[in-house]
Length: 320
Image (cartoon, rainbow, N blue to C red):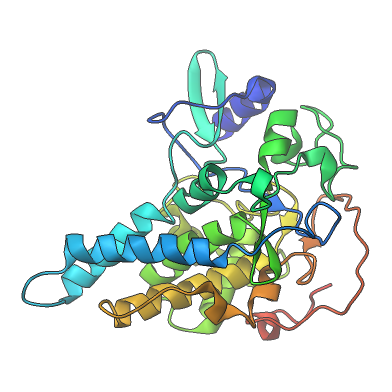
C-alpha cells in the first residue's frame, strides 16, 4: 500500500483518462460545490429524468431476475445486485490513471450513476454545471505534488476530477457525488446488515474520516469497507483523500439505504421517485448541511444559517 501511494504521488502530474477495462479503485472520491450562484441558479429540475432512468433499470432488473414462481430471498438478492451493477457500482474507465515504472492504476472512479449524469445531462440545456477546481469553494488551496495538502490536490487533473458536477433536483442543488453515495454506500450499508441508525451513522463517519467518533469501532468498519475496496482506510472517502468530512454524504448514504431496503421489501411494486425525499434533499446539500474540514483546507464560503439536524446529528454532538 505505501509503495503504491508513493508511486501515485510521483505520477499524479501525468494523470490521464483511462480506457474502459483497466483496473480501478475509488481513491479520491469527489466533493462538490453546490452553492446557489449566478451559474447554478438557472439549472432546470431534472428529477423526472432521474426517476425515469432508475425506474427503467428496475423494470429491466425485474425482467432479468424474477422467477416464474415468484420472488424468493435468492431472487431478491439477484434483483438488488442487478440494480447495483447499473447504479452504484464503479464504472471502469471513468477515473484518472496514474502510473509509475510502467504500472498503471485507475483512481477516483465514478459510479455508473455518476457516469450516466455526465454522459446524459446537457449543460447547454441547463441540466448540469461542470466546475473546475479553481471555480469552486476550494480554489484558494494550493495544487502541487509537494504543496497540495491532500491526495486530490496533488495535481490539476486530480483536483478538477475531485469536483462533482451540480444539478437541480426538485429545487435543491446537489452534486452528482451524492447519488454515488446514495446508490453505492447505501448498498454497502444494506448488505452489511446495519439495521440500526447508529451503526449506519458510525460506518458513514468512519468512511468520511470524522476523527472524534467511534475510534474503538474502526477495525469493524474497516473490515466492512474492505469487502468492497481492499485498500480502504479511515477517511478514504473524505478527510484522507480531500480533507472534507461531509455530513451531506452521510445523509445520502442513509437515504440510499432506505432505497435498497424498500426495494428488497417490495420487489414487484417499488417505484423510485426522488421527490419522496423532498424534506431530506437539503440535507444532501453541502452549503446547507455544512462540512467539517481537516488538514487546514481553505474554504471560500461563509455560513448564512444554522446547521440543520440530519439523521445522524444525535450521534455526533460536537459538529462544528
